[in-house]
Length: 124
Image 1 (cartoon, helix red, strand yellow):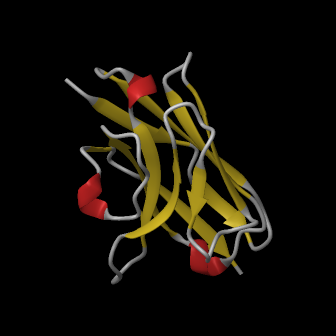
Image 2 (tube, one colour):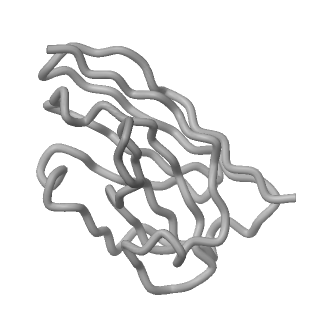
């Protein structure tokens, strides 16, 4: 049974930082591309960042480029999202997702497994 468990969310002030983690189990982690998405209240879920099997290739939404960094540790079956210079508009539930493919995608239906999400709130 595949499980993705996010952690590290919380309340932070405008300009602050948070590091999200997503621990995976029940799958061969090193053969999955991983992604982070977010969903703000009243809005659709949107792509944030993705990383390839061994972490060589990364891709970011324009809204977070230069502020967020995705990384992974295949020995720990964990993917991370370092979020710096946070803004109130970054407030959302953040989800990690796993994709059984080499290529990266920003599409929600391109991912096979999803976590339950972790809340990130940025106060102004």
